[in-house]
Length: 180
Image 1: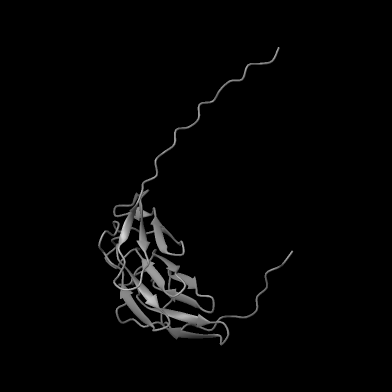
Image 2: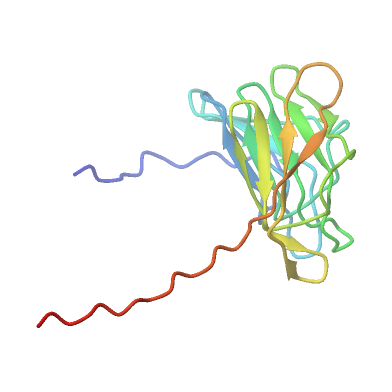
């Protein structure tokens, strides 16, 4: 059995604040951390940690999405897609951004056909699209809906609907006859 061991502390990020509820993705060579906040603030800043050099580089904030907490992010192989979460107004957001670490630049995700704002949702990357599911809508209402955000080059891709879950009926319990 392999045992976990501590190999060293990470250096303090270049960020001046301690974040709570930020996201992190692994690119294959570095960890990108973004967003989150403290008790009173929501941040649209982030950093890239390179374990080979044990150092942090800040992400650009030009065109970065608004600061948020309880959002999701996926790594596409070339970009981080950030979506949803709580904004500083306290409302759940239906916006996001695409961060390209090769160019250190952000592009907004489209709002066309975007699902309603939500936080505490889940997101996965399928290899060609991000699927978001569930979460909490405004007013603390849980939702069982989602959307598919299709990745493509060129103009910002358009999200498409994901079907709702249809509850399956519970099986009827049957009593087996007692053998004689």
